[in-house]
Length: 214
Ligand code: SAM
Image (cartoon, rainbow, N blue to C red; front, side):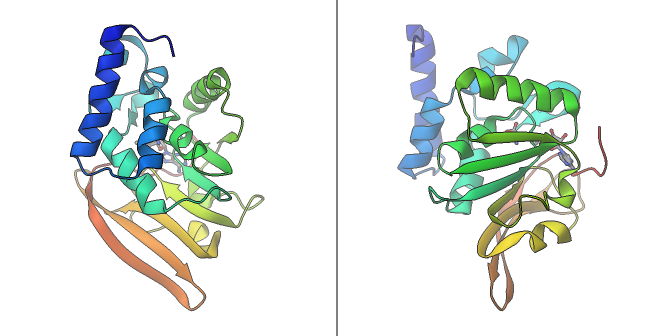
């Protein structure tokens, strides 16, 4: 890492902020220290990469707030052999964090321009265990199913049926759910051999899950 001293200081403050907001998992903090969020931003927003705030990206979308990325990653309880599906690549930052903790990450984005840009960053950072696909992720990826873990980074009215069906028994899905544009509930779904268990984690705010291509 060849960061200038002020950038190094900003990145140290970033990790400190995450800790102070309740992120305790050392593996997640290490991943967030290693993966430079500024690589996923463009223009003047790069200077704000280490703020704990969502920021605009292309196609009218957003890169998620880092503490929410950490919380959702923590809720997935990832293991190193896990195969993960992310719906909503956006900038690619969340997928990059997942790639440090899981065996393989499939990430689906409905905007071709965002998927192309994210793939460019994955290539530049050498993140070879991420596969980025253009498509409507609400249908999942039947060819690659089942998944150990599924994360949806756009808000759905309900956990999408095809995603529930593509979750392994024993698997976990994390998804923001709600009809409101301003606040939704982050839900964790555990698939047991007897059915699905739902747990509410906290209030969040995400852009909506939209059907079809952008
Ligand atoms: N995970 C992203 C990151 O780390 O930057 C943030 C995701 S952004 C909040 C939500 C993304 O979900 C947007 O890029 C949006 O285009 C995408 N999206 C919405 N509906 C989708 C769908 N049905 N299939 C795939 N992507 C979708």
